[in-house]
Length: 368
Ligand SMILES: *Cc1c(COP(=O)(O)O)cnc(C)c1O
Image (tube, rainbow, N blue to C red; front, side, top):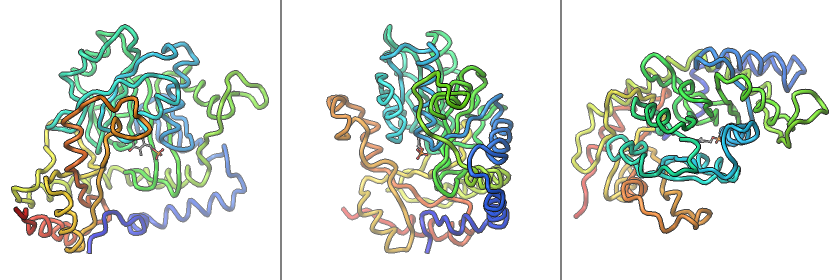
């Protein structure tokens, strides 16, 4: 048996330290805005390589707060256009529409499943204010081309780093490459809390201060409000757990890479297309393969006792909530959405389980 992701055994990997951390908070009697949040913010900022980290309630809030703060501080115009990949988790796009910004989705590159860099220019308009880059599945989406594109057209770069904690671009980490980055610590992410949590990292002190204020009702000082804010905070329990788990993130990511490379070396099935390996760093949040008979393949894996999931079955422009985009067409995105299967690839897996996944995939045959 290979569960897709067994959070209980993930937890057991580093259980003592996380449990100690929880007890530390229970005994402290301080549940919000205490030592743990301060400690996590400074440790995570130094891990990512930014001057600031602001802990917030979850990853979607982190994204929403970045754009809210960019609008409030006059860095991007209300109602302006933001370029983003058409293939991503719904939260990426929700953060824009919740802020009254116009998402401009771009087709996917079939090789790396990231935003197709060759199609960026054609999506520019005089209203474009920013590029929202997603390091999807754990793979670095930043490149020299992205850097030039943003500089040449005076666009702000915002990163959705929800799936790529610890990923590198040359000697810098993703999450430190643009004006600000959003991180999610949803339990299933590479760095996961025991509930919801998220963070913004940024080198921009004014932006960090605005996000901090907006996430706390809109005021830097209690009962004085500069913005119409929200309540989105990271509590002490989550911060304490994350501080402990952060210590193991590099080790966990190294194991993810080892497993991903073992899967790539071991899987040999012409009906199953493996993810590419290129010069971009990848922390393998998800190990995506493509199969034209997805239903048959998933049924086969289930019969073999191998868990699997789909990321993501319906493209955003095909969702009911975004019916205003239903006339758009992104054939690569749509084809990934109808053929993608995520195989187990996480640090809780044993070498035997990795072999089980390989055997299960290799024993599948397309029924014609
Ligand atoms: C998980 C995720 C989010 C949202 O994070 P939550 O903490 O669940 O709100 C945003 N973007 C991407 C790409 C994600 O995978």
